[in-house]
Amino acid sequence: MSPFILALALALSAAPGSDAPDETATPLGMAPYSVRVDGTSIEIPMIPLPVGTDGYPERFRFGSPDGETGRKGDEGPALEMKVAPFWIGRFEITWDQFNVFRAEYPELLDRRLTKAEAPSSDWADAVSIPTPLWEQDSRPILEGLGEKGGYPVADISRFAAQQFTKWLSKKTGQFYRLPTEVEWEYAARAGTSTAYFFGDDPSELGDYAWMFDNSVYEDPDRGYPGVGAGYRKVGQKKPSPWGLHDIYGNVSEWVIDAYDPAGYALLEGAPQSSSDSVQWPKTIFPGVVRGGNWESEPEACRSAARLASSRDWQRRDPQIPKSIWWYTDAFHVGFRIVRPREVPSPEEQRRFWDGRVEQIEKILETGGKQLRAKVETKK
Image: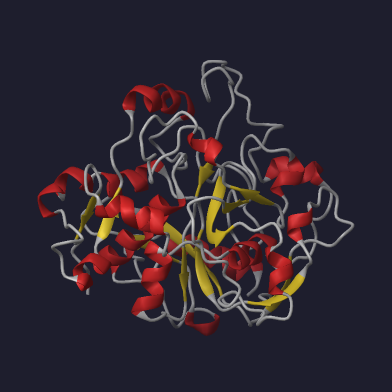
């Protein structure tokens, strides 16, 4: 697709009523569109990646070469991976969008399900809604960082992000989920094999990313309290060649995979595709976030750079067990969504949404403040 056609398509995608892709417009019947949820303010622009067509290679190098500046051992060995077509969010999910989901907590309390009493099909189909934030701790932080008007949602767990995608899928009748680690890197590279999609020299990074070098506010009362720096509203920096904003920096982005420092080596000799290479989580920690963030040095924002989630992100959480939704010290972590062109089986969809993390399942089953309820599904 030429840059002119892509730019025109992106402009049209923001037009009112563009809540579904025009399947006659672009290769593989994939066009930009915006996700909308009836009766809400949610509008999430989606960018098509018509893998296998001109400019969107079916295979790419996943990981970094030995000589790349800033490379860490968990980025290799580099592997050739095959990817299937998908759409990806043009921006990171914002607090405005995520808070629409959160707002259903009080509304659904009277429809709470319990594992012991609910039919197994209802329990599997239900959505878990995040518990309220601890206002005493989070309010001063959010007042400094920003919450309304386009700031990226942050300080949330992978499970919270997964449940947002499940809720969004139920509300729209389309399948949304977190990207796999392979899909995220494919999208970030935008057809390149250099450290960044603009080349190997990090001097240009400030044009595309909020990071350690440029995230400090002139007003010391702005940003994270006592730090004076923080994330910014999405979409203020230049987009990637494929139209994605903030794929580097701002907030690090969850992928579905568990973190294993030797995981790439384990994939050698296995089927090399984005679907077959998922490192499915079995525990809450460690997971993987990508792209670097407002606290990151340039090398940590490279396309191949990985960051493992840590229990330290919850070190000030006094609860036992600790929250499965919120962290206390990870206001650098958010997410964006994807939608695969080929819709998987219902069982595979649930695996992306709920996973099979025993610790989370046990916490949901105990009830308490945890809420799991049926959400009206759009047909």
